[in-house]
Length: 310
Image (cartoon, rainbow, N blue to C red; front, top):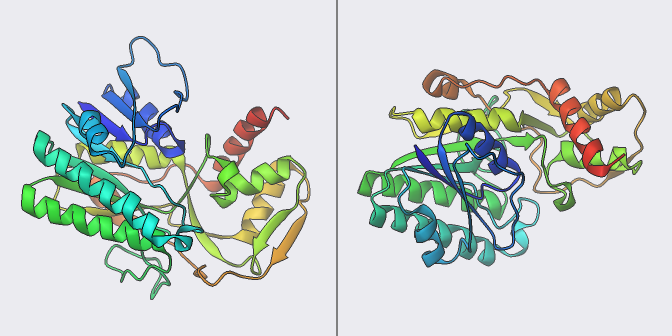
């Protein structure tokens, strides 16, 4: 199968690309201009590295021409900063996605898999674990935009017969995560610890999140490509909650030493607990997480040590 991965050169995208190549798929990886391949591909791996601008309808149309499935991973904003400029968030993400969908209709492409945010679309939980029927009351523009995109995807599914899979991924971590953007507690905490820098914690450290290893996320996308059932929205999560304080203890265990910590005032947009129910993905996609957080942190630490040349 020929698959276009929009944003396929990044942290999650590269893991998905490697997973799909192992399955024998042919890939067109769409990335920003001047974005170099994350590794050298073998001669037997069918990969087309395609650069362009997600906000440019012409580039998007070329990127998905002739493919069977589109995987949409591109986001121009981050949860923590999206409220600073919601107009840019809407213009660069929602409008771009509508251009992708229109190009799919024009090119008669019948399947799209979209990465949504299991960490932001639900807001403060009314019950735990959060399943796909839970109310959606996002606190940040990032989550509102993701939710709006979901609604447009479902509209195009009904109107044009495009099969839509929406994967609400919780807090992914692992190799190739960009710690310079300060996104992802595990990557950031490990990076600071390995550099012997103190870790900054917003609040008392009892905020609980659901962390899922990036290779497990990639497996979920591989399962989604084959899925032909009636469901559209799936939580992709570990199903296990870990507080920031517990996370630090796990990192200290991995590194074999104590970490310096600095506690800052809590942030208004942080919900206290977010743990997702992933049973629908198991029942429908045949997917379940395989990597526990201890092993995942150890693998991520090894990669970071190599990247930082420590």
